[in-house]
Amino acid sequence: MLMAHPAVLKNLIEQYETLRILHAEDGSTGVRQRMDDVAYTLCVATGTRDIDAALIAARHQLPGARPEDDSVLTT
Image 1 (spheres, rainbow, N blue to C red):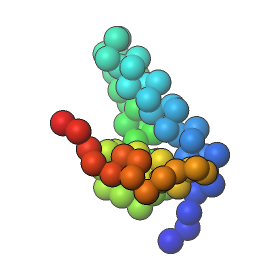
Image 2: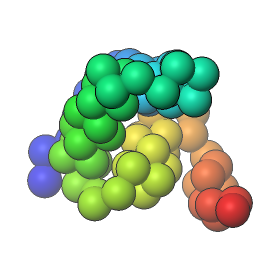
Image 3: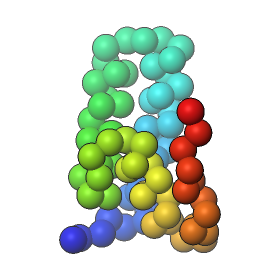
């Protein structure tokens, strides 16, 4: 499997987190569509099927990541 460059992953994580905040504040369909697009890209880049797993996988591929980072999702 091809691996995305850490800089690309970092950018996608930042975009997703920003869009999630905007969607929570605004709720517009444009923001939601962009958030879905970034989520899809993160899933493809990390070989995962849902955004939570994609975010965990992407963070683990960043420089300085420790194995215990994001290992357990909180509900």
